[in-house]
Image 1: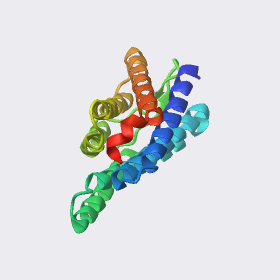
Image 2 (image 1 turned 90 degrees about the vertical axis):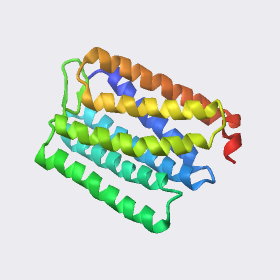
Image 3 (image 1 turned 60 degrees about the horizontal axis):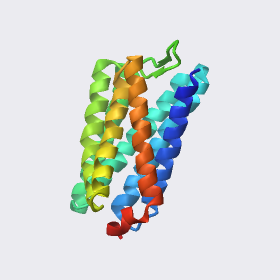
Image 4 (image 1 turned 30 degrees about the vertical axis):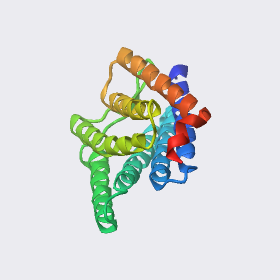
Length: 214
């Protein structure tokens, strides 16, 4: 077990949960659904952490984490359709739910992965190239639009931090599920941690950041 990896996962659980709770506490439906999505992502990281420290149950908890992540994508999709007519929003969300269910089915039963912990103590999801493609498209298509909408609620310079900080986290997540180079993963982990720290300090402790969102 690599203590740095454990610290990375635990930090991500805490960071995502705190940011999710902060967004949920706001009187804005977009923020609330975005916060729910972040809390589901925190659950995903928690499941992967449990699997990492219990290697004999790794595949089970990796699956639980994947389910939480995919459900969060449906919530993010619903949030991004805030301005759409109710019927359109419902239809697209249902279609999104069907799509992520399909991704789960393919990744679990048609083209299954075999997650493992490397000798260096890194957790590799070991997704096949086809499933990596599905997750990458889903993450990009769903999260980028809602991140842009959330960022627009903030005034400069906080809007830039929210937009590019959250995009950096999404890109980092994609790197974690697609890359197997140890050095690259170390660098990615540091980038994710530094960006989360910047978002924490700004969104949790700086009231001015939220002044334009009231």
